[in-house]
Length: 165
Length: 121
Image 1 (tube, helix red, strand yellow):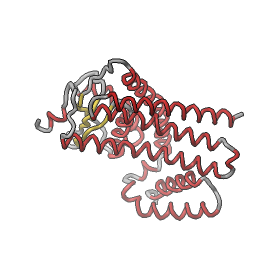
Image 2 (cartoon, one colour; image 1 turned 90 degrees about the horizontal axis):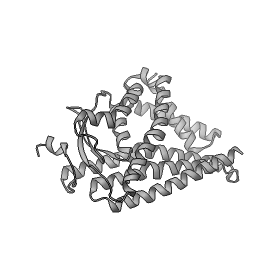
Image 3 (tube, chains in turn green, brown; image 1 turned 60 degrees about the vertical axis):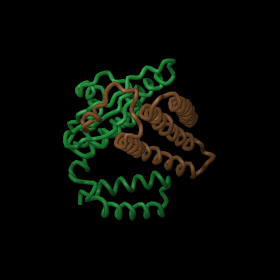
Image 4 (cartoon, one colour; image 1 turned 120 degrees about the vertical axis):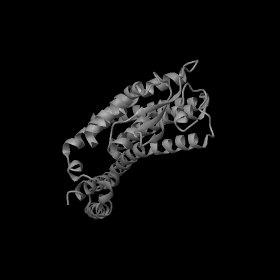
């Protein structure tokens, strides 16, 4: 039972926000959709119901989103915009190995998405056996995996581990 | 009063997004290879698409002339922004991975390519 609740709540919330109305018609359709989608999809989406129901984890996800969308993005945008607009375009491009510590699939996907969404770093490939991201880095501060981890991933992964791990 | 503040915040996001998109376009032209251009494209994903959509949502929510429809517009813009935030990197990943696998674009200039080394290059 607890497996189905988080998915249903999420679907219902998205439906209500998207339709922008709380008329009885929308409430009924939203509830029906929420029940149907969560019955069909929960077993693929939720592996550990106690994690998915945790309010604390959800709060940390919101906090991560706020931090990521303001501080991290602002820093990265300023850097890449600086490179684009400068006269000689100082780039030091490299594809580096970045080892990740996370075990959960959600953490790995969210980390990779965060890295790619910040300008200046793009995940090119992933090696799940060796737990490595291959990241194209526009201004490589260093080539060894530890420097790359410290500069690119550490910040995101530690915060996301508190949400998903 | 609060409506004015929200509307101007939305307008500021919209203007900033326009500027960032312009910079991204300049970067697409000035960078010299595929991978560097990909970085210019990701500049336009967050700064040039996510924030302007958020700004448009704020503007529509703070425009009472739209009546009930402002919630519909604001809500769908908000949903679109967050779905884009989650799905846009999937496209970048697919492009970068496929390009590297097929070796159709050399990552030149480059100071190190560990992916090439590990793949037995």
